[in-house]
Length: 314
Image 1: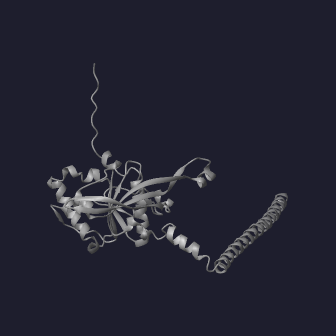
Image 2 (image 1 turned 90 degrees about the horizontal axis):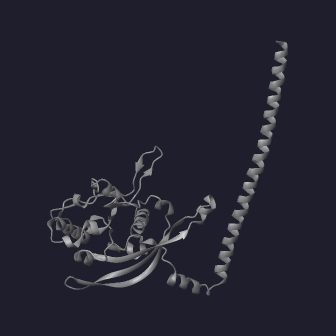
């Protein structure tokens, strides 16, 4: 027993000494690492302050010549306040383009940006947003899906738009309101009160109506109520940061080129499109674009019964 006790004593003494040495090494490493980080932070802050100082000196020392650059930026620079974009003007807007042109991605980005600007979200006729997850794993959405028939029935608006939503999006007008059906009561029962709602939208707290379509025109009365007509074209860029992290090639949305038109009435039910300009709308919400539902109408068709295929016989 005495030998065992001596062995235990030596063992514990060795372990205590080893633990003490390890702690000393860790302390030294912490001091070196934290000291290096602190020194690097001070260098970066000093550099930033120096750049800011140089900027101030440069601006003051170029009076009044720098007014040339100010005038140039104000005249030709990119619109910096999103509210100034023509497709954010209060009213109805028509988004036209063939499949893959970027209509829906543009609309989703506009929905998110307008939500951040106003604190209100959008009502959409299709599931344009993928679910986000809370910390407990439950799903939630910023934007909500609605059915026009819940608001417009029998030629009247039977319900008001819910509070907290000021952006109404009709995804793919071709499937919603094909103008070939404009003599049918089911068509008019929804379209007529919807046009009325566009005329009173500010009284109802609605800022924007978006109509997305693969057809260049829709019902003439809807067209004549529009504030703007826009043709988006998506622009993509190489994701350099992703390549650095993974070594894989990927392209992400850089933004959209938007060609805008004004609807000019010509008398009766006739009108023409007058081009008002072309601008680049940058994609500044890359993280939010991860929640765009690329196949937002897929669930609608997945829920339909499948056609039975007959076996081919000779």
